[in-house]
Length: 312
Length: 190
Image (cartoon, rainbow over all chains, first blue to last red; front, side):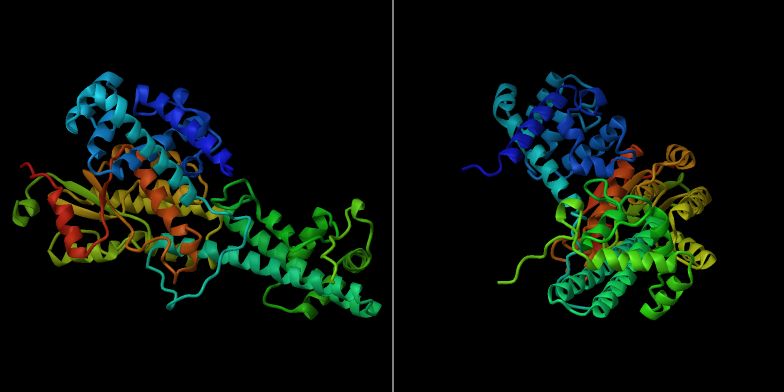
């Protein structure tokens, strides 16, 4: 059974589009670019304006030139560059001229080159493009992967490194807040399941509200630093979406969310938050509504809390 | 070709960029150039500008601050470019690095950067391949998230966007990398 039919279809489409692009060669002309090529994640991520097909075509041009400069078959590398017109000697030339130059440089007869060698070159270019896309993008819908370190964290003295580290800080802070909220939501659910006292559930719900406010604050900080969409995410994904990954929480109005984000101070604790919320206009009402919504169990079809799974 | 010929200060200006993402070994290569008495950027002007912006703001740069920072860095790059009048010089990053910087933050290029990239041209661009394997680097948590790779590739893309064909310098000892770079330089014309 083939389990990667979709990937195969994409690979086939990519190869077909590369063949079409080869007819005119480099520089890439936007009108000759297929959707699979322009849709490569590595292309979109490099495009200065990812929504603009011309910008993507420009990014594809740069990416192709780089892949040809890094062609993984040393013997065929000069031929590949000549074939695509990446060298000045064949840039803008007809496919026949480029093919002849490519065949000559690697010592093949031109018909043999066209039938046997050229497909190999195209296969390898397509493979390099696919590999680049796989390596380039991240799955930002999942938390940053952690793993054991073999030594201390050392950053090079480089502004790009500093900014990359700042970005990772913002991501780690956001995900950290989300996990802490998740923990409190699980506590509330457990207490309800165990039929704990109302005051105990209310207290846990209040802790969850504080954690939720800290999530909103972390998301707001990310937006202020980097904008509404996560940097370099494979899809348009905002910090607000990540904030919802903790689990179901009672719906809040935008004004309520803004208030909570303003009241949450990562340097302070629950008592400070509770005091500030109590002093804010409509704060007590918000807290009460949150507690009631979180500690009740409305039917799922009405958008109620998820069921965490029955214990055996 | 001897180093003396390359360093002949009476020749027209020849400008070469050394660039790459973090962990590419740029500092070591520039130190090696200095050790050979080859004119090259001292330090990295962008770092000082970055520190000044942070000090002035009292916090990390935000969306609204990045363009001002980019413009200040561009100004410094142009000044360094124009100050060089004769002979050979290597630059620690070049004007088109600005494309990579902006792209990292999802910003499009701004007119001054595009004009500067068109007007102030370097003779060649050397991209240092990363010293660390992106996948095996385990003491940088953000390497796993591929931030380094993204930065590196966006810098390269910036140079292609600006019409350059970078020369890739494989990971190696700084001395051998410098030898490789010097071997790519043409004989200067007087």
